[in-house]
Image (cartoon, rainbow, N blue to C red; front, top):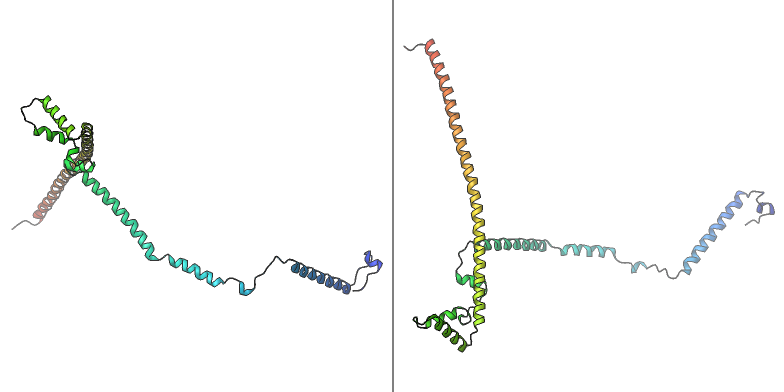
Length: 239
């Protein structure tokens, strides 16, 4: 590189083109040298070799495998399960409606209420003891006799009374439900009956209107036909 004289350093004389190129070339070499030094000094930056780079094709294959795992059979099974659940709910509703309209026996009511089935632990045991006594005994003696028999048999009066209350409660529950269901059914059908009666009256009115319409139409047409016949007979009398 050509050394600058004092005038060139002070900027009084411009550098020649050749000298400018030399300066730029030198600056470029210094910049490249600084970059190489910086890269060599930064040991923390580890660029993996090509052989250690992940195989992108395998990643794409893995994605396809995941998609393939969601098979149509699985989706169809889930849809079938949902439909099955919906059908079961409808069946439960229909069965419940049937049960409400079904005449239940007393045994069915007790069974549905999960009441005691062992007669010795039910209120009916007292009635069994009562029927075993002579009919001509006074009521007080009968009562005391039944209580004495229950005590000897280790049957608690309180347990029998509790059973009686539970049975009365279960019976009242069914009775209330039956009354409510019957009211709903009767009101619904009465409403339908009123609607049908109104529809019948409307249809009767339509029929009557049509009858009158047909009579009027017949009268007009028959009159016109007769009128034409009269004219024809006038022009062309019968021989």
